[in-house]
Length: 211
Ligand SMILES: [Zn+2]
Image 1 (cartoon, rainbow, N blue to C red):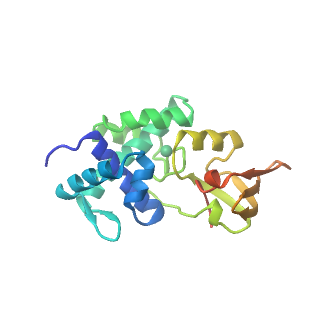
Image 2 (image 1 turned 45 degrees about the vertical axis):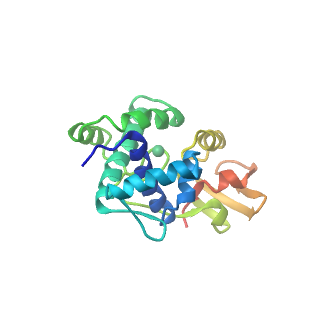
């Protein structure tokens, strides 16, 4: 098979992540995620379809070959992030950025050593599961019921989202009480804090909490 360019690899990866979180990937999701024109996306989709990596079936679906490539890349990305945060001590924004480059370089046997040294983590620092490990899914904060929940993941690992989430202490594993959910925002309380904070819907929708 011809070699995948890095941009095409990134589309394959994004489709996998969309399937993982939303159950399916739509063309409009890709346009939103990559900030590119519909024309650029449709060209990329045609190439991936020709290469046998995706199918158009109720949105976009990875074939088993496409899935294999995506899982390898995502495993590499998420383990790279863990390596950078847990061992090197970088913050979770930089580790995500640098992992985008590192994910393409590790040979499989080196990746296995990294995984072992990290004690085979279940997720990346942002809460996304390492492929092959236990997957825990919940609901976006904007769709969750009121009451106590645990933060599972930050859904889109974009810089502004990660910065805001970190500033507010919205990290995977943290318990949070949802007090009010409506179109103008989500009011929450964090443990050990009497303070109530209201999250903008655009941020709240990116925080996945346990059911
Ligand atoms: Zn991550």
